[in-house]
Length: 542
Image 1 (tube, rainbow, N blue to C red):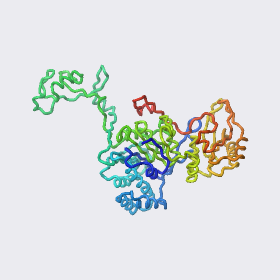
Image 2: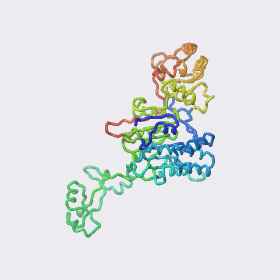
Image 3: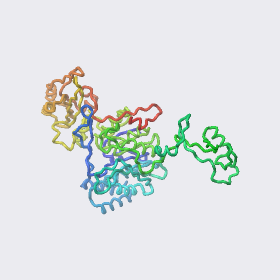
Image 4: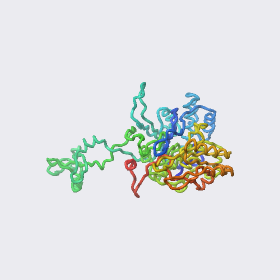
């Protein structure tokens, strides 16, 4: 299976593109029904975050006619839905009612049915959620996968408690519901390093010649009736745990410590211990901090260490990892880093564009060469279809071709003629210069180019870029030519102030004529890995 990013509704992508029993591990971090809006942070000017952010999604649900249709067609009337799931979700609707929580569960249920279908018999699934819906989701999961397939409920402490909850306890954790499809599933038990205080207390001895820490283990046998193990060793006759031959070999290998009286004890080296087994309370993985190199500015972004633990525990190299709500692609990045195959799905072009940028930054991966992108327009026809289906997603996609900051679709009507923004550096003081982007999916006219020139003047922008789905008219080209030039002091050349490109030109590689500049997306830290050697999280963060 080829690594791939999919743009579209994950339910439809799963049904149309992902075969039965083809995935080894699913991680999903869906909206939590938190009744909140989440904004993406973009880098602006010389690197600081932009004060004008874009709303990535609104995690707010309500029961609508579309929800009723989904309930009937995708669950009740769908022959692929198990009868027990139909009964469960119908009982939920009777009990909960037609409200926001029920709308959320109706969205999740058919997707979980499809995710179970695509899992291999040895596969596992981790559902990341929070207390608003975790108890409902567990019932749904028990019904879809079977209660016997439940493995663990993991609590991830994602932040320290804050003193803002005056009535009740502060919520500082998320829940991971871990299920397997069958009884035989991939499992690599994870460990964490011993606590330093524990090490100092129990591994007190240090070999002077090697610096290795070790503790002492009793070599005497608790069973005193073992004549074959009773012998004299170094002046002490005991019932030993080992035979004389094994004792001699351990002594030759330097694995025995002798007390002041000559009594033998076994050396147990700290560096040979696996550490403490990871349990269901995860407090050792910190959330992404404001200054973290991982931070991309995407809402609800999870730390790579969290995804690496899940992937390492429940899959092996070469396995296929699927994230159907992949956002900025942390699961995809962790899978790539750990030599797994991966599939990522998201319903916004903004997220797909962020993932492409992240894969380029971290691994120097390019779409079409190193992985597929399915669902993005590849020609004028598919671009026009996207525009007719969803003009806002078309705008996001067109702006993403320049890796510019798109304007918030929730603020349409107040965009003031700007669909995207980015900056380049110029002048003797290396000051940021603004570039505004305008996108037209249909009906582009000469007045639109005139309006763009007015925006340039109003915003004191250096350049104005006009992206058109249609071929520009001759008056539009004439208006473009009359815009004059921007003279770059730093790059010692002139650039047309107003430039028009069609979608067809951009897809064919005919880019705008621009000074060198940095992507507006937050850059992910590059993973540099010598051949055959895995980069650690500490190296990545360093």
